[in-house]
Image (cartoon, rainbow, N blue to C red):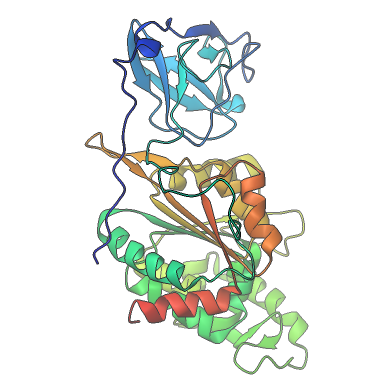
Length: 362
């Protein structure tokens, strides 16, 4: 059965509650980088605001931001991007009574006949995920031609030769349109390509190599000598794996730094807000996001990814979001932090990536 997107059903603005609703209240920012009191905080769902009797959607929504009315439309901005005088939506009712409507069921998420009480509604190690693998494979086939697939990965993906090879095949086959990670993932993957180790451990046999604890530092140092990751790959004539495949395929990657980073690699963005902006620039057009074994990056990307995307032709489509981790805590943490559209899969990422690649015939 061919994959098909769910149809988006917009609110019926001819209903009395919408017709009789007042225009939204807009207040100017009192200063740069701060919203007026009682500002409206955005969610992951489609949101509409009434202006001059017309309901307008904020087309690029994201959590924990505010809606700013400018040039006849609503932009969604972080506090640090606000300017004095920006007109911000205020008031916090979301039922249209104050000109604000949050449309949480536009893709008919609740119309699936589920009982109010039923066993095994959460995602846990006891959940069967074989259907998820099939759904993801069909989704990826569709998105390769019609969407943008963003992968968010932790270093566990780089510790196994099979997983590195499988992800490289996904990149080369066009199933990866952007990769977001930290210094560790890139470092250990490049270490694997150059020295066949990750943190000094052979990526095939998993044996610790003599003096291997220097390997990741030697890798970082060599990359820095070369001046960039692409230059390192070219000079050392490296093939395969995660980062090499991205470079050779022209797939963009965003590497965000942390306090504990070694080195770091030249491409790692050390300023956290510059890193956040770089991530959001990629997420803004994402239609599928798959997070692999990284709790903090998963939560960060989850918080900046809405449940929908408005396409250039005006079509509103669903954004698919998966979180894969061996720990139940991680896959359920996203829901706790507000990313209600995230779907969790409890397994190790090596098995997941190799399984998805196999399902896609790679």
